[in-house]
Image (cartoon, rainbow, N blue to C red; front, side):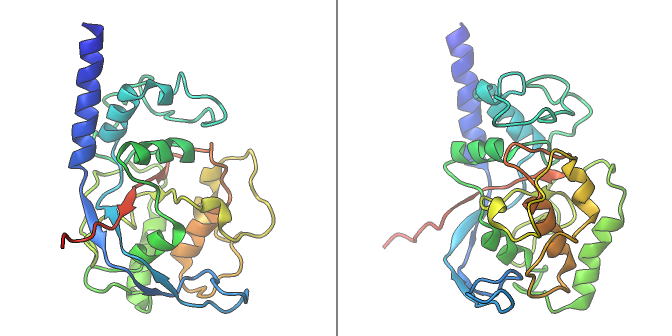
Length: 261
């Protein structure tokens, strides 16, 4: 009976993974706020290849199914090397989010290691910074709305909300790529978070949540008007892979699927 139960849980996890909505993102030429060429003050546009990204961040319910199917990622079993003590801190139990967390809200308090493992369970990976920034540049009708001051102000209004506000369910209005909740819900892990530029080495044992309203650590930013992006760079640059915060979630990407010939 025990093996049958384990099989059922694993099967449910696979069904949930298969049902995850990935949106095809076409490649394109893109200029990051971070320098990509040899000069620290001039950015060279890069050509991004097409990829598929989760339309929404990973939810509490999805991550709960993952840790039940992969108990080595439960908070009572995960090694300290892969997650610090705040990992899934708000959950009622080691594999139970409890009634206080809405199942369709984005999962937070997850380390980079755990986020990476979840994405791999879906045959995916974490997005690179450039992939995330490329998608995040879009509003609901334009693939690059960064030149619109009104749109930038709208994004910054997120930072005026209390940091302890309860997270809503995922599934906000999609942007021009068909991807939701890139702004205004949670921060998101990227695969190469530790390669972002920052002044000095600010990875400390302090509380990463304190950086939510501080972007002063980010340097070598080409477009300093993109303050919301600068703040994300500052936060991500401050983290270690085992760190968790109550405002940091993630989503996954897959390789672009070529159309059949």
